[in-house]
Length: 292
Image (cartoon, rainbow, N blue to C red; front, top):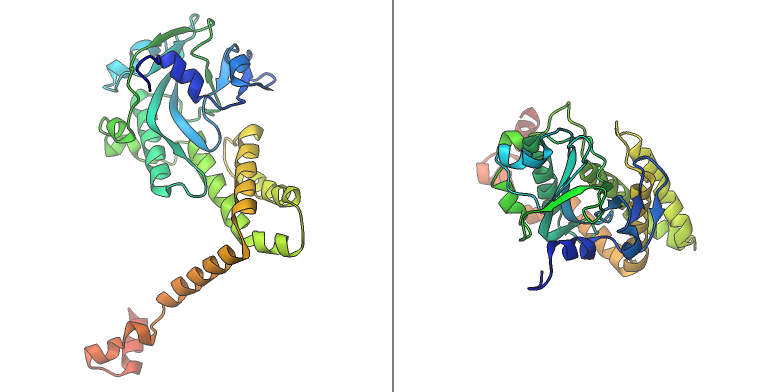
């Protein structure tokens, strides 16, 4: 954030380059460059793989004061439906969390914990798809810009208790949680199948189609599946990254690391002879271990 940049400027800057947008929720989605997409009432706020925004859907006529009433920090913006007072509360992150292959899985998990906790504390909709938000730049909504400084995830986390972040069987996995789950399942298959597809001289397109089947199958396990655009974005990102970054050398290193990890679980000479340390025979040591 620069000295002369407003939160409105930041909202526009952090949008995906070509976000989905529409004027009718549930209607036809358009893909436009952000300058044109920003004229629509609903807009995609995060890309499938980079999440600078936490958005919460609050279905209540007290949406405007919900954060204050429930002891949450002020949102970056609140965009309200003038007819019923329902709205979206958006929190801008100081450091966007990404789901690229080299991204920190710990950071992603922390993001999901904070998202779940804030959703609970705000009394927001846990089933909110999170693909589109009320466009804070659109005149259709009553928008108020509040917090000027982006939030750190650990700052938001300070407002939450363990109970807020607790997973329950009744709550649906959030859009980002579903995104992360699909990403993991697609990535695992991509790593395993890359070598076979290269060896068979198949194309990136064929590789992506195979991963799309994996993603679609996994997505069907969710009570509320991710949308087609979200699934497509995840598959495309994983396929392109693995296809470009992997190599026979990288594949060999991964296989060697897996082998080393597997052998590390076994009682090899490199790990010593624990039966000698205990003063018993090797057979007795294994019998005792089996009985545990």
